[in-house]
Length: 117
Length: 111
Image (cartoon, rainbow over all chains, first blue to last red; front, side, top):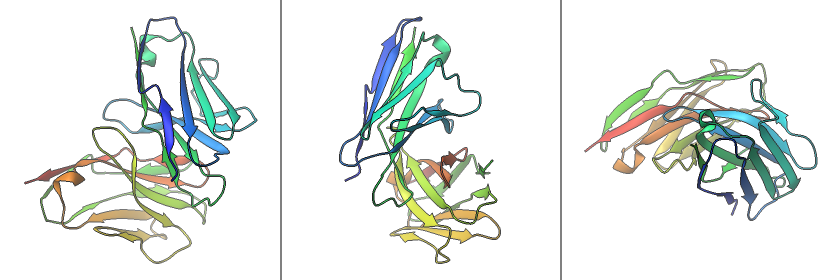
């Protein structure tokens, strides 16, 4: 149980285009999901907290207009990188907190590698 | 803001030996969670062990155990009988509401 699926696993896009990454909790409801960004050999940096039915809360320094987050249901959050540029190339990871039987643990997706040409 | 510090960028251990990874954190809260996550080359985050701050007893999961010192805000991970499959990046993490990660420690296991 507690499986989080992220799609796509990897994506290559041209500079100036937008890319959407989906994060789904497959067997549990997740009121809260988190989006992280990870550069090679570095730690996971929290970008934003996604709450079902409300606006996301962004960390300081994260451009909310560039990284659009939508959490329309209890099992799906999406991250859209708008007008992507090469500096947006990174590994993006989502995680979800179980609404019921919450043990504090977050469950992670497999990650999405974005390459912007 | 909560911070998590891992002071060991890299560690090496001989197969079958024991290694300890260090972690300290800073918080003014009394109720929180602490975690150790493992990230292998696949980059999938794998939970190694979890500790609730209100529990004094140190968590243990098979070959993995922690030394939780709440007053000192220290949370080290001990890996016993190290195996080749333990080689990975290990992250210490703190959670009150958000999950905050340390910088990570690369663990190499020598055969």
